[in-house]
Image (cartoon, rainbow over all chains, first blue to last red):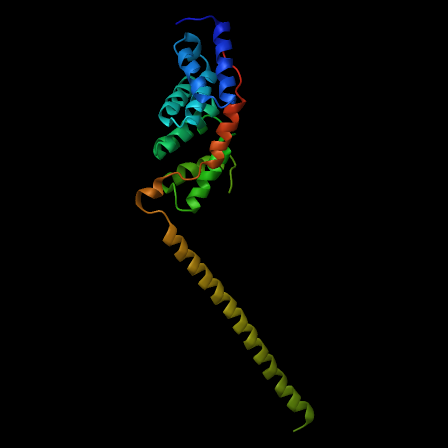
Length: 147
Length: 80
C-alpha cells in the first residue's frame, strides 16, 4: 500500500488523536495500516507512538518490537532507548535492559535516563540489580547522578 | 585536719561519680545505637531479595512516568 506523504501525515494525526482519546484499539488499527507504507519506516515518531499505544494495550511484546526498531533506526533517540529499556524490564530481561541503557549512555548524555539511573542506585540499596552495580555506578558518576 | 583539706578531698570524688554517670549514659546510648543498627540489618537481611531476584531491576516507576509523558507529547510524524 502506497499513499502520499500528506495522506500518511493525516492518517498518523488521526491515530494520535484516537490515542489521546484513549481509543487505543482504533489507534493501533490505523497505525498497523500505516506500517505497510514506506513513510512509516523512516518516521521515528511513528515507531514511538506505536510502541506507546501497544504499551497502553498491555501488549509489551509488540511494544518492544516498535522501540527496538526505533532504537536501531535512530540510535540517538533517548526516548526510543528508554522505551526499549523498559520493555526489556517488563519482559524480565534485566541484562538486555542494562545493555541498552549502556549502549545509549556510552555515546550520549543522560536526560530522561537520569531518573532511571537514580532508580537503579536505589535498587542497589535494597539489594536488587546487584549484578549491574559497577556498570551503573560508573554511568551514574559520569552523568552526575547521586541518590 | 583542717576544713579546707576535707573539701579538697571530697571534690574530686564527686566529680568522679558524675563522670562515671555521664560515661554510663554515653555507653547506654552507644549500646542502643548498636542494637538499633543490628536490628535494622537483621530486618534488611530478612527482606533482602534472594538468588535470581538479586539480579532483577525493580524500580521503574519514574522511568515509566517519563516515557509516558514524553510519548504523549508526540503529536505528529517526525519525517513525513
